[in-house]
Length: 198
Image (cartoon, rainbow, N blue to C red; front, side):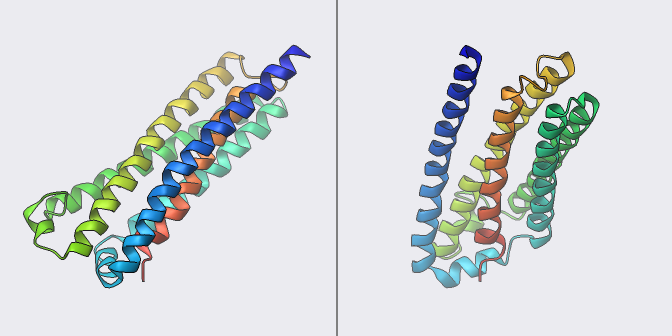
């Protein structure tokens, strides 16, 4: 009975934490919407300077990683330790690939002089300045959450491998999966806001 209460408390704590994350990104998305309504043409012009390929590829990568995280939880519940480990490894690899892609994309923008307070960016319109400012803040904050999510998945991977996470005790893996799904869900909103803006 005590273990059940502990697990319920841990799950509730994770949901409350995720709620604060939703508020954080929700506030940034509202800020984006306000500026988009004021500088629509500039935001569209800024969006055209981003790589749709990178954005779409990263979306596919994160969707795949969400699937494999869910599959790892199912595998643990069925007592399939090896499958759980393999799915977690794929999820972690996807997260690393996402960060590499984001690093390359940011590097390309910085190489072309498009970064906060650069001469190139300050020479653009106010709307494009705001667009790229929001782009760096929101995608940078999301990237930080990806890193945190990867750490959680690594902890869960070691817990599954060592037998601390089992079919009867998998809250650590489930909470790590919840966090990872939130990170993926946030990207689903980021992708159209910056890469499909019309």
